[in-house]
Structures are given as structure tokens and as C-alpha cells.
Image (cartoon, rainbow, N blue to C red):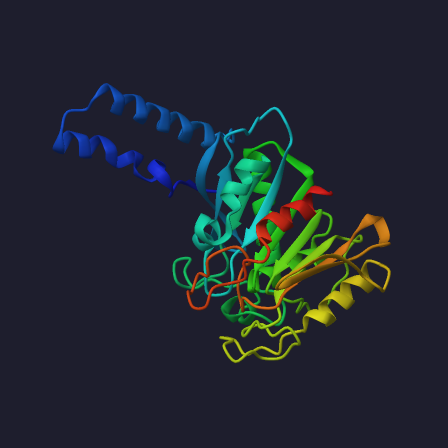
Length: 329
């Protein structure tokens, strides 16, 4: 598999332009030269698989198509130590830049605080990476209709990252928003040997079959008044796909049974507008956890909505709770 390396973030996207800009407008200063040298050094190291702290975009070819993913490497990354990695998947009709946006999902700042590498794959797209979707079973869009091998692509992303950074193979996690959360469930079903745990926000399990190799920890977050992926299942009034989505209760029941957990949950959080429950006693210490907000609609709690509209719930912070869940493993 031939892999191509590109940069598209921060100053790395303009390395090749800086000298011409300086030459045309003003003399090149010593500060400019130092900055250019550091950026060129970072590009050289990254291309050789020696990632250093910063933001990157990488390309690879999978299933005959060019695919992309973005990466945030925290400032405290130490290449001599195995480092956890979190893959976060965008919603249907979005793309990786939305999921990497600090304003919406807060994964870059959490990466800095907790010391993991954050990765944002781009879904299947016929429009230069825009309006991308994931083939998560019953949903969504072009990825589903073309039977895109998105599980295979995400496996390829993991393998590619292992050549670029010192990744702790026992602590690789996946999560996503909406269609991205649905895709996380597919990864739980088809790649349980890769991912230690998964989490989904506003996206239920629509997989057609599910035979994980082991019990896998699952964390689900959903608003009761979600207008796109209805809490109790069916096609939401604001849904773009009008798929017959699986309900939250049925999703949780599936994974409680799948993981061999006790049938009765324990209430672990109860505050205004939100509660959380944990199903324990599962095989291989694999919990199933559910957090529900009363309000917030189709959103990532604690983050700004990508499409605007009524604010999401601030009763809980999904990013914080997901990392707390991962940290147990």
C-alpha cells in the first residue's frame, strides 16, 4: 500500500510558500529563517515516522481510494514511551476538520491535558472530503450505499499511526458523534482486538451483525429530546437519512447481553438535566455505561453545535466523561 504524506494545518501548510512571500514583500529576517528551519525539520521528522508535537494531516490509499486523517500530538509526547491513542469520528455530512475543531469537541485540549495522541479520520466522500459519511450498518449516505470499507480504512489508519509514533497497542480507543458514534459500534463489533473501548454520542448501534472477539467496554451518551436519532428509535423529524434508527434502550440491552453484564444498572450520577448508569459484572471487566441528558437535542454535551441552533446540554461534558471512562482501561 502506497502512502502519501501531506500537511494542511498551521504553518506546515505554507512551508513551500513562505520564501516566495518574503522575497516579494520584505527582507527575510533571522527570526523568519529560524521559523522556516524548525518547520522544515518537523516536516522531515514526520515524513520519516518520527512525529513530534504538533498538528498534521496524512493521506493513505485504501480500497483504491485516497483517504485522509488528521492528528494532534500533545506537547508532552515522549517518543520513547508507548502513548495512548484516541480516534474520534465526525458525524454524517461532516468531515475530520469539524471533529478536530476545539470549539465543538475539545479533543485537542483533552489530548494536551491527558497526554494521548488524538486522531480524526475522514469518512467516505465524493466531494473532496466534504459531506463525508461512515458505513455503520443502516446508516449513512454514500458510505452505506457504496458499501465503503470504513472499518478497513480505520484499521489502516491505526496501522499507519503505529509507523509514525510510539502507540500503546493496548490503549487505542474510538468514539464518535452521531454517524461517527454508530461507526464506533461497528468497530466494537469488527475490531475489538484493535480498540480497548468505544464511546458513542447521539449515535445508536445499527450494525447488521456483531461478533466481537472479546467483551469490549461501551459508553453511550444521548439526549432524550434528540430530534435526529430518536432516543426511542425510528426516524427523527430532523433526520437527513430517515433511517429507522435503533433505540438507545435496545442498543444498551444488546451490549449488556453481548458483554455478559448484570441486567440491573447502578445509578452513578444524578444531577439537574442528566443521569448516568453503569452495568457491571461483565465479562473481562467490560462495563456498559449510559449517560442521558434531558435536553440538548442532537449534540455533543459540553460542546458547541456544528450546525448551530438551540444549545446542547451543559449538564455534563462528553469529552471529559469519555476520557474518564477510557482511563479505567
